[in-house]
Image (cartoon, rainbow, N blue to C red; front, side, top):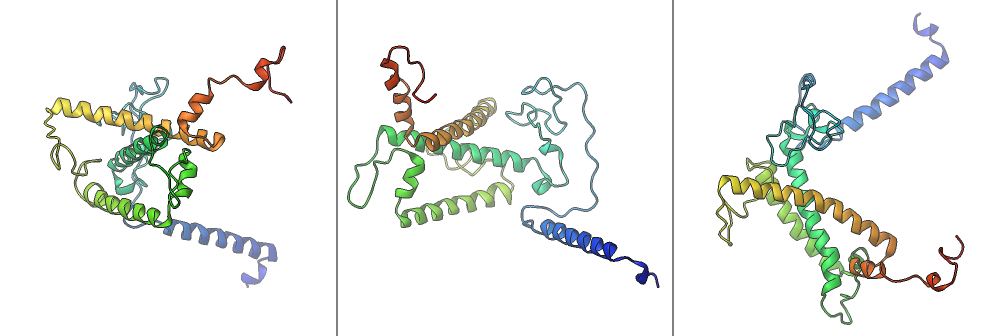
Length: 251
């Protein structure tokens, strides 16, 4: 029969292929149904638009999905994520703008958290250590129930954001605060002023994400607070006072 003509190596090869396909299938199935919409046939990739240069990377062409209609859109998408509509969450670029705004807002708060305790912090006592100026080490000084409170509070905020901006119809980043929502400061901007504020926010978000990476790595490398690092940058090293010594010992 045909089955008897298959050699042992061929059967082994077929088993290996079957195992790989099974792993791929299981990995594909591990996708949150709320994050990825159902899809049918793969849609063709959008045709490239010639002559439209990226404002962020002038030596490249901006992807067709970034046409400048969004506030702060400068055509920056070197990985082409905005063009991959078949696997884009909710099949909308709104998801990426929502993620960018949320990460940027958290980064702004995080940067303040790195810097402000170096300027002022509560006095420590027998059960609370507020004197740790390195934000990365300070996390370990927080009492366990304090971390639980933070997790519950942040989780409640994220649930509201998901209901309004992701599952709901609110614009990306619109959580109902400020103009058009809960507005304790009485902001009343014109359309042009409002768009200018949106542009300022997205720029601050992008800058803060870079800034928090800087203080994060410096905290890991130095083990000191941000202000401590700045002060130490102006101190003369010990080997500076030795005649003819321009480098530390051992170099």
